[in-house]
Image (cartoon, rainbow, N blue to C red; front, side):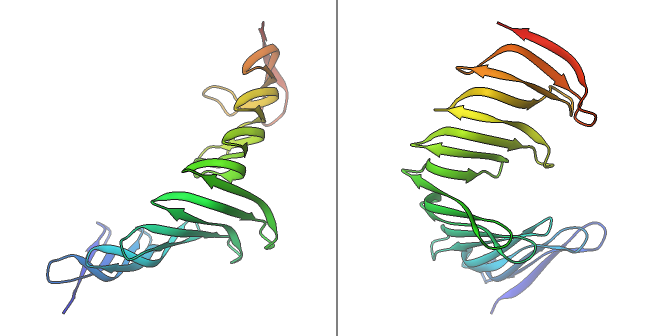
Length: 209
């Protein structure tokens, strides 16, 4: 017969609730909360192995990950706040595989991307790190947008076979202002301007050869 083990934060709020077997392995329902009582994760363990559908919540974003009987992730679906699917795809041997689909919040398909041989291959991809890019045969190609963990834009521009080219906007070092200018074969060229992110006024310029 399984027992329930609970852990608590120093403020008295429950942190986790685990069903465990006689070997003290997680076996059955597991739930995890933050210090404010918001559910973070919920799913089933079998003899210490994560199996079936698991629900994860982060800043009201809901993700479902599906695990096989050996504890390997095989599918992931992320949802918008309105309940519509945001992205969906499969895993093989712990790596994203095959076609991943990205949706608009109204449920229509926005983009698709394909993984091949454990690598990003063709199409559009959104990384957890905030690196949103188009790929062609494993190389970044076309428009790219990268954001930090708070949603601030770090950079926006085009790639040609993994090399920055043309006009780019990039976060200025240690500020929330932006540098704008051109790349040629991966190198900054000509005049680059530092622009105030709020007023869009030019704060300075740098000349590159």
